[in-house]
Image (cartoon, rainbow, N blue to C red; front, side, top):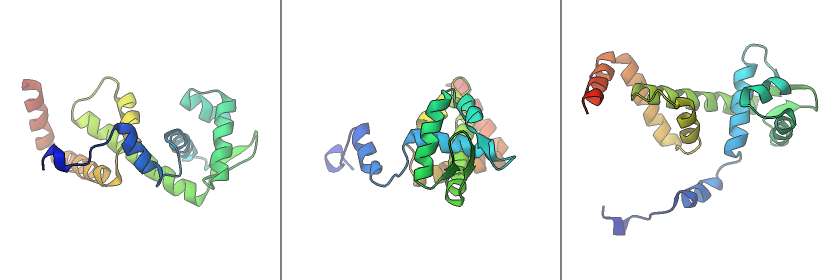
Length: 158
């Protein structure tokens, strides 16, 4: 297909198209993902722990938890515990899986330095269809180590 037949947009243009479907901002997703990560053992987390994990101030974490509570993803009362609702737990687990998959993919292709930052940049902009294919590729490479090794040998020679 020639460029004349494609409908190109700026990155911001694509973001605006996707924004209509999204309820949560990337920042809200980051908070929910971390709350889910921190809640795995006890079933809840605290604002101080969440703020420390995300390197933000507790008042910022409190504001975001209030927003997530308004949208039905968490149960939160000021100075209290943060508990994910069923809806929050479901989305939180998806966000964790998305993060882990992208991080594994980047590791497989040889990204070592700045892998967390790269993961954060990619995870909020990847479509579900593309993520699904990345998940399949990651699983394939893990189950066929010889392919991953051959890829890395090829990469090193370039």
